[in-house]
Every structure is written in structure tokens, then in C-alpha cells.
Image (cartoon, rainbow, N blue to C red; front, side, top):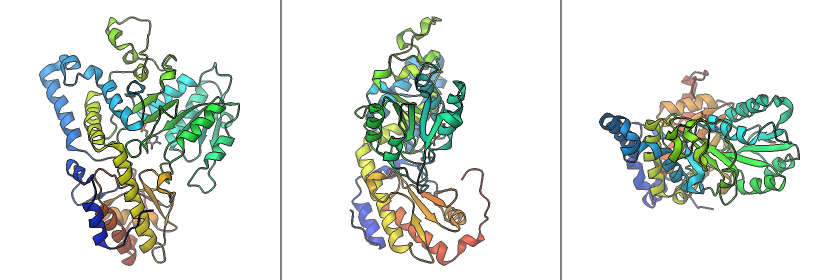
Length: 429
Ligand SMILES: *Cc1c(COP(=O)(O)O)cnc(C)c1O
């Protein structure tokens, strides 16, 4: 356990010894803000912006020739960016491709594995996962003419915040064909034991995939070594690639010969794609699961943004991220736990069981306190009913940012300034 101190000098001391401190200068931090929402939309970096500008210049200068003469050539960019991301998640280069969006990639991979031919007919997920995953799984079950009410098994949470891996395993019975679970829960920040769940699923003949939207770019993974069957994640959270930029899919190499269910010409074998044969032959790599022409502007942003991550190193990012969240928890415990503050920590206390954010909870007034925080330039987000998520991203947040956040929360309660805010939620919170 790290030993922290509550005074401001200690925050400065931590910043002075932070090996990643220099990366902050590469990011555009909105003026007057302490940005704590990197788990929802990461910030723009000079690197991402340069990469987009370069594509704009290439489009002007090269037109269609950009597909092969761009630097790098646009035609191979999705695979190239996939190989970069593979390093961050512990996969082989050809097991990851940048394509589609998170939800589309769930549909694409689940429909590949979960078909009418499966003798097992059920899918296992959990009740705390991000809703889009549930919507997509229900849709997949319906497409096979089955009833989601009986065919989607949801692992329940005892405390409404965390999941017990052993209870998930109890649900892995011989009716289950496929399991899709989150790596990190979007509300509490709990990091599930991916290796253990994968091993247990495989013992029972179940294909298992993980939604890594809340872990990619924040923690190190070993997807190949753990033999995870498939994974998906977006690029715009911790990976800082911009709103709606292309997402990723990971497919273990042992599945490359499966037939993609959502076929499209960008999944064709690369060297023969422009032969334009009408019989589909997919690339024997994750690239075979691409569908359409990639959005090169977005992909360029992903390319630029990933470079920053690779330069910093995912192990160093994880180390700092754990320190930042542990420091935040320490300060809340010491300064904000008792009345009138009465904040609680809704995330696991062991740093190795947490992703990159902390769920700060309060029985009353969490929504308005979150609004008051934002009005003072501290940008976190609110998740109903009573959680303020605080995500100090390692590449651009400092220890002093964390210290100031806790001081600000204290002032908001001391001055009761949250009372001035509306109890209405905005359409994006
Ligand atoms: C953010 C997030 C998504 C987002 O899905 P999109 O298709 O990119 O809109 C999906 N799953 C999880 C767990 C997320 O956190």
C-alpha cells in the first residue's frame, strides 16, 4: 500500500517524481478545467490532431492515390493501427484491427460464434454491463429466433456495484454457448479477473469475449496469452482518439478460419480485394471481420493517439493510474468520509481490482454536487442514482489535479453551493 499524506506539498512531491509528467504538455486540456472524464471521452493530443491534419493534406494533394501513396498508405491503416493496439492489449499483431464501432463489433463477433448451428443456445452476460452490450446480445438472440427472456442469462450483483467471479462461473452450464463480459465495470470500476473467467469458460466449452471499453489504454492485458476468444473496445475513452473514431476488435488466431457473419469487401483477402470476385474469401486475420471502407480521418486520429500510448508504455500508464486513483481514495477517506461530507467509495479498494476510475458515492445530492463540481471546472460525470465518476487519466492528469478535486468537493459541501443547481439531468451527463 502506498503511503500518502493529505497536504498540498505531498501532491507536488508526487508530481515531481512522476515519470509520465511530460506527456501532459502534449494534450489540449480545456481552459480552466481539471479533466476527470477520460473514461468517457479522452482529450485531444497534438499527435492526434497532427495525424488528422496530415490526412486532410494528403486528400487534397493525392486524391484517390492516398490509398497507396499516403504516408502511411490509407489502404493498410486499419491493420497497422490494429497492430499498434495489439501491443497495448497483449495480442498478436494480426489479431487486432481498427474497424466499426464497439456495438457493431459486438454484433459482428457474436453473430460469428452464436449461430443456429450451435447445440448450446444461451448467452451469458451480467446485469451491470453497459446497456448497449445487453441490447446487442438480445438482438442476436432474437435473430436466431429465440427468446432473450430465457436465452440471455445475466449474472446478478449482490451489492449492485460489483460482480463475484465465482458466481459468474456457477452460471456457466452446458446450455451456454457464449459469454460476453466487461473487463472493467463502467460504474464501479471493478476489474474482473479475465484470465480466470476465460479458463473456467473454456473448461466448460464456452466461447468467451470481453468488452474492454473501460480497460483499453488504462491497464495492461494479455488477451492472447489468456486465450480470450474475442474482444472489442472503443478508441475514444482512455485511448484519446476522438468522439466516434473507429473501434477495435480482437479475435484469437485460432478462430481466423471461422466464417465472418457480417461480411463485407474490406474483410476480403487484402492482396485480392480489388480482383472484385463475387465469392467472398475473408482475410485470415482479425482484418477479415472488417466490413466497409474505413473512415480515414477517424482512423488517423486513432493512429496519432496510439503513438502516445506506445511511447509512454502501458505498464507505466497503469502504474500511474493506480497511484492516482489510490491517492484519490486516500484523500476521500481522510477528508470527506464523515458528516457533513459523507462521501463513500463505490469501487474496489484493492488497486489491482480497479480500472482507471473511481466511483464516488453519496446517499444524497450526488447529481447536484456533480453539477457544482463541473461549474468549477472539474469535469467528471454522473451515473444514476448516486455516483460521480472520477477518472484521472495518467497521460494528462497530475496528482495536484486529484488533490484540488478533493478540496473542491470539500468546499462545495462546506458552502452548500450545490443547492444552487438544478435537479434536472442534461441529455449527456
Ligand atoms: C463506451 C462503451 C461502449 C460504447 O459503444 P459504442 O458502440 O462505441 O457507442 C460500449 N460498451 C461499453 C462497456 C462501453 O463502456
